[in-house]
Length: 468
Ligand code: FAD
Ligand code: NAD
Image (cartoon, rainbow, N blue to C red):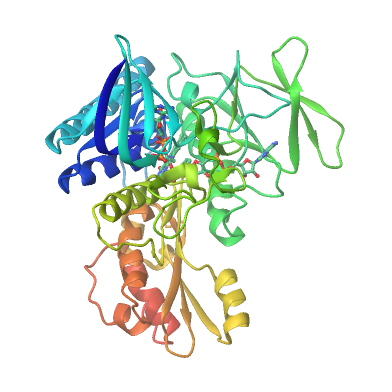
């Protein structure tokens, strides 16, 4: 057995683990990163990046086909063709480029990367079996960044045509009938993409409406787009399992007789579960927060010098949260006093149209206000009154701002519409910097841009709206 010592050993090379490793290396800490699969974790390999590549290709194909009938601005084209094999290969090339980039960044930061499955022996020792040898790494600090895996439905275990997002992102061809179980982030981002690619898509959701984490006003434009794309949406419904021939999904919808949905592929996307088993985590007997590893505001677990970051530590299970925690943990290990005190972590659902939320929603702010004794102001500005949106032939959606009535402190913002994901950074910055409505109203935005809707929503909240 090989022996190795370090100041920091990190298990998991996803956005949490690789960022922690780069930052630790930059800070001069001797760092070992152990990854059992490809660097970049879920996000780079089978999550954020490949899904956005597929969404882009699907959208381009759909838009091109939409131009078979003359567009309002006079363009018409012939039938669009898509070589799906090339689409998947292009997506894989982007993934490889980014994971290769991560390897380069780790090298530049002086991080030692070991490829293999890590097993925790105690809070300072990790064993890893590689192709040629077993290595025991001893380190003062252990960072757990093992991420999450798709949640299994007991009625519909993965296997055969029942697949997770990982397999859906690498299919050799487009399924004729795709049934999606779960109308959350993954189900709708990918369900919409495959509908645009030409699959017949049916979405089965247990809740009463799609995207139940988001409020109904925000999701209404997505419901309309699903109708336009002829995606069947079945809510208040549960998957009961495959039919005996394995060719259909049996579902039960509240108030209706069970029915069968023919399916070439069934995507199960009902959430993700933290990766806590099979690598000796139980030996540490850490305090848990439900199924997640419990952490304090510095991301330290109940055992001193054992840290946990990313999906392993709970909601929101987002790459940018994992990265922020990773950098912070490295700085804490290096002796800096950092704590995780983000006022706002933006969420983006890359559906068509995109949906975003930063900070408090009107409902959340109202509930806080009841406890803390304040009233709120909410103002909305529709893209139908935005010049840029009209010139892009897509006026669906709006921007909404939530502020405290007494001092106009901006508490939150939401939006739905084409390209609104790019509005998150200015909205998050405003909230992090404690902006008031007057700060946004007094900032000159470039014309004509969709971001003017933020300015107009702030003006609206102040009763000074100009274009609506
Ligand atoms: P992971 O990325 O899951 O990485 C954990 C790593 O640990 C893995 O590489 C795993 O192989 C490794 N590992 C586990 N156990 C061991 C062991 N014993 N030994 C060695 N290595 C081990 N988030 C966003 O913010 N934006 C998006 O657009 C977005 N899109 C997504 C789309 C899909 C289809 C999916 C599935 C997820 C998406 N996410 C998105 C979520 C995002 O991918 C995760 O929040 C993020 O990857 C979490 O990072 P992490 O470092 O905590 O874990
Ligand atoms: P999710 O929590 O977003 O959605 C799961 C959906 O499945 C919910 O609407 C839920 O009501 C439904 N559901 C649960 N059990 C069901 C059942 N038995 N039958 C039918 N429906 C059922 O989870 P997800 O879509 O699997 O995504 C997992 C996580 O990955 C997300 O929570 C998010 O953290 C991350 N993610 C983020 C992005 C992004 O940031 N754009 C994209 C994809 C994934």
